[in-house]
Length: 168
Image 1 (cartoon, rainbow, N blue to C red):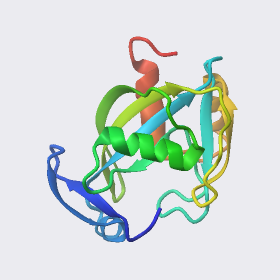
Image 2 (image 1 turned 120 degrees about the vertical axis):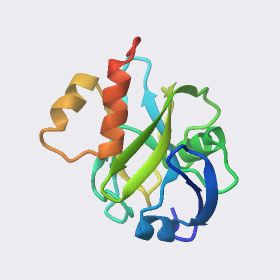
Image 3 (image 1 turned 180 degrees about the vertical axis):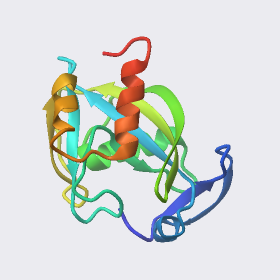
């Protein structure tokens, strides 16, 4: 994550309108694209990460999704693969696209695309962005929310996923 990364900016209908440095996007509250990957193990547990205190949004929060902003010139698919490799060291695993959504919380306005994957291999945390993480049963994650702050957009993703026709 760099404040100088150039990110894709979109309008309210998710049409690309330009690109700006990440810091400008955050300061001006510009609508942007992001990817969200729900990483499950073969036992159906979901990976939850704790964000570092240096993150530019929701520092120190827990997050049920791996992912991040879509960079200028990237597709959602390329961004999802890049973010999964960067944050958790996961490569060459199939991603299933689940749904797109719009979410707004304070000055964070985002068009997201949600993916899922199953991964039983090693996880290598990106020290700059992920302080810690582990797999948990979904029921335990829901109980954790009473004790720990979770990112609002990530929590929305989990709730919508659980309401889908074929959760877990």
